[in-house]
Structure formats: C-alpha cells, structure tokens
Length: 154
Image 1: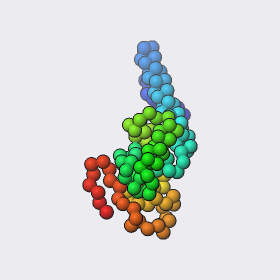
Image 2 (image 1 turned 30 degrees about the vertical axis):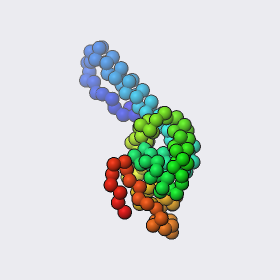
Image 3 (image 1 turned 45 degrees about the vertical axis):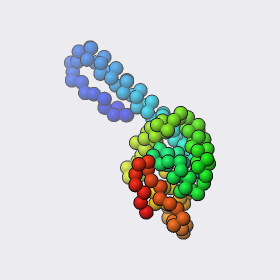
Image 4 (image 1 turned 45 degrees about the horizontal axis):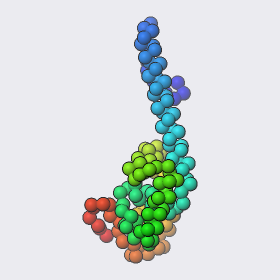
C-alpha cells in the first residue's frame, strides 16, 4: 500500500486469480525499483561530470553538432570531442543514442515545471553563464547553435 494499489480483488477470489494478481504486483514493483535505481545511478554519475562535460553532454543529447558546440563555447572541436568522450565514459554509456536515452530517463523524473538535471546553459540563446541571471557577458560573439538539419537563426 505504501507504493500504491496494484489491483482490487473482490472476495471470495479464486486461488489462480489471487496468484496472478500477486505475480503482477511483484513484477511491477521490481520494474519500479529497477527504474528508481537507474535514475539514482545516472544522477550520481551526472554529478561526477565537470561543468564543461555537462554542457557538452546535454548539448550532444539535444542533437547539436560538435562543431556548433565548440563554436558556442569558444573551444576547439577537438576539446568538445574530448569532453564528450569523457562524459560518455563517466556516465557509463557506449554511444550517443545511449546518452540521449540516459537524459530522457533523467528528464522523465523531473519535478513539475523543471528539468531534473540542469547545466545552467542555454546553448540556443548564447547564455553560457552558470547563473542564468548573470547576463553581463556579450552575446554578440556567440554564434547561434543549430540542430542538425535545422536552419540557423539569430
């Protein structure tokens, strides 16, 4: 009852129906615990990333190209690739699709009205300050980052 009601059975209940209801509840409970442990694991691993790795990993998972991320951050593309490789290793994922899936899992657990993991960076509008209220930096030197196949806009 602590997690929630799985099913209602009306007495008298057949033994087979009771067994099926119990098995279903056990499987559902395992699935929920597995998902919760995966989220906890990903949150723990995400916390181990440096700020730059978080920015690059989030941007890659959102479909941005290395070249565009590098341009936005004022870094070399090779540096972005290095951050990306390090982030994949720290998050224990093997590929970009796995990275996208990991962020989907983290974001699906977000509290209402907010992201579950936040880098403090809005790559689209050029806000690279950790604190979104710090807008003292000039945004003119930042080119707009576009998703693969999307038109660039300013």
